[in-house]
Amino acid sequence: MSFLGFTNKLNLIQSVFNKPQRLSVERQICRAFDERRSGFAISRPHSELLRLDILYALARHARWVKVPLFKDVLVDFLVTEHEIPRALSESMVNDVLESCDALLGDDPNFTASELLQGKVDEEFLTYIFVAAASSTQVSGVREHLGLGAGLLRSLKSAADSLAEQDQGRNGVGAPKLFLPDVDTVFASIMMKLTGAVRECPWVLDVYRLKYLLLEQLDRHRFAVLAPLVPVVYEFLCAMGRTNHKALDQESMGLIWLGCHEDQVVTIDGIVLLLEAAGLIFRTDVRRRGKRQEVLWDLTPVAEQLTAEAFVSTLAARTKKPGDQEWFEAPGNWRKGYLQQAIAQSPRETLKKAVEKIPLRLEDPILAEAVIEALVRAQMPDVAEGVFMAWTGQKIPPPTASSICRAASLITSRPAVRIRLQSIAEAHESLMVRAAALEALL
Image 1 (cartoon, rainbow, N blue to C red):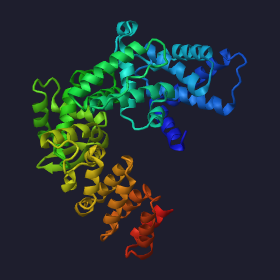
Image 2 (image 1 turned 180 degrees about the horizontal axis):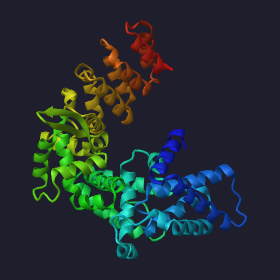
Image 3 (image 1 turned 45 degrees about the vertical axis):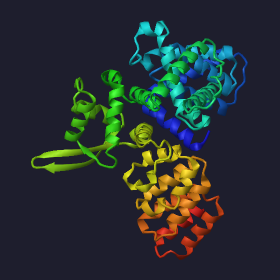
Image 4 (image 1 turned 30 degrees about the vertical axis):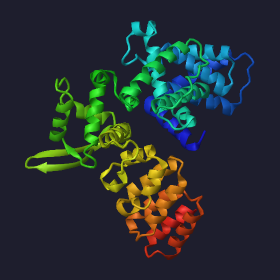
């Protein structure tokens, strides 16, 4: 586990459990393990890591711990990741979940009868699948979700298969999972999502929005938005289409009215809920006479959620899927949307764009975003071309930090290192020279 991953786990645990709660759960974990291990030896560092991983799983999936399938997944995680015997894992997990029942509280959106009937097993597995499908690497989603590698590899493989089928290629069938009684549920999820993605390429992002709201909002606030998730998603997309224009609440009200004519939730209510969920933020407050006018914009999380819809809709409108010349005016694009367009563009399109991007990207943050997206798309040679053309122009001091961050992504390229050395030795700005030197180091 990386140091950053370790820190992120601790931060999440502390945000969900206060100190007395955390200590109480830790004691239950230690007691359950000590009472049942019957000679099974484990080192102290391993014991501490085991305790951290269980705490993280409970904190990350606090809204799902009453789901029967969650117990199976957690048991399998202990077996595959920590090599704890299955019988010991099952006893330990049962004890921990029973003893922590009062602390973990009620599920926010499923009734007891639905839990007993197993109706939410499919919802829980869909939640995990959507997280796996949205991640580029199994290791990243494993660290985020805190679940077994085997399950996530199967889900990620199935997600890749789903993407291949959507693009018209001959993808392999969905792999079978190793957890008992899951194959049938998983098959139904694959059938449902395959059809849904064909109908709407960004449908997984709508699911992601639903699960983000479930994670960020309490039971009552989530219940307000749960029936309106597709409407909320369209509202965020409409805000995103304004590009970099922050909106006042009156303008947002008109957009909300266009998305949701029934007005079960007013614009005042939706603003409060979306701010609490971390999807919009206040960019400015202006005075109009005796009253204040608040301006709102999408957070980076909301940009990421709506990027696929923006780019796919634009491609369909221009009838040039993946080949629209987004690089003609990239300064008008949001960072997240620009990166999504790069991810979907053919390699040849990106190569043609190299000469145009640097001359039109006056915003250093967007230039940095282009290079980051190209590296992520495994095109470091194209990213190098953008960097070389961009830094071949006059570099103003405010661009220094962006130069440093962008260069750090491709310092393995010899030409980039030579350019950085040149900047570090000869640039007129001390700030730019320092940034180039930092990137080299």
